[in-house]
Image 1 (tube, rainbow, N blue to C red):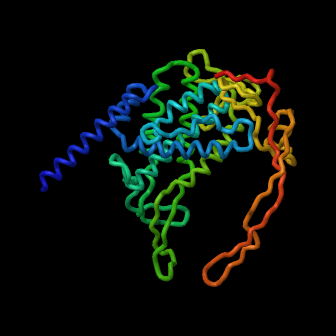
Image 2: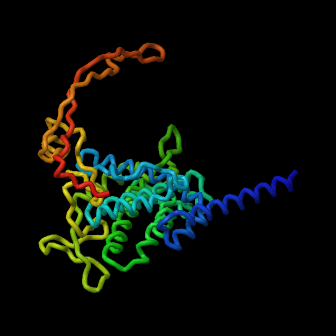
Image 3: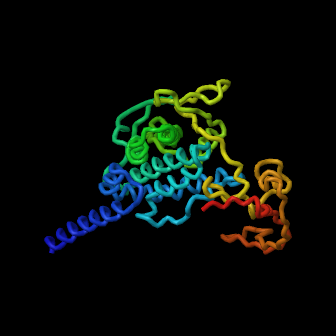
Length: 354
């Protein structure tokens, strides 16, 4: 029986490896190094696929009130556990050209890869990594000494694998766009590490904290998204310098970009009308806020085309009361609200380039 079990385990590993090889060989757009990593680490690729959902969701959250709202990202997560975001990402980013939206997409996706791999390491889901092995022994912070314990997130492993996999394709090309992508990829990776936090558990009489056990943990991915969104707002327009190794600011009146600044080459389109070649689905049919003067307001969102108003009746929970023990009972209330949606442009304005 033991020999049979051993044989079955070996067969499962062989089938798994063969399956990974077949799948990785048939994913379009991978360079040799990416294909090798895909074949060697199918469990990590699976984790990255789960991370793809996270960074796409975060991108759409950050731009939910803007004309461009990440909606051009394909929602079909089916290839190899939804992992091969790179081909979808590259299709989107090529549509966005070298705009600041492309800069954000590369940064947030690279951050998502780091976050997903690091989390999977700490949860024991990967063979190649686990908790940070360097967080052992004693250390100290501004509150005094503590013992390393628990499971510190292995952020350095996540960053290294993400760099090897994500940057591999850009390193095969020596042009301005590849240089821009590599810079923004690095910004995304380091953004995750920026929000590592020290979490501690107190020991001692009545939890007096005479002794502490601490570990490093990643913050919620929303903090990384918020940070990169601010970097998007302050992104620096650049050109490649003459020797092709770095950037020069496009406008001499602006400061040079730092390692943490997002960079871009081309101005963004207005995203008012559908132009799939520019990554724009337009704003026709988008819900807008009539009372707002911001980017979610009907005047801005609808690009001056006007909006349609539809009156709808909604049923919501109301007058909720807690009853001992242990239930919350609510009434159902109806209210009527006006929903405003952007008018479609006149046919002559459409630029539907498929």
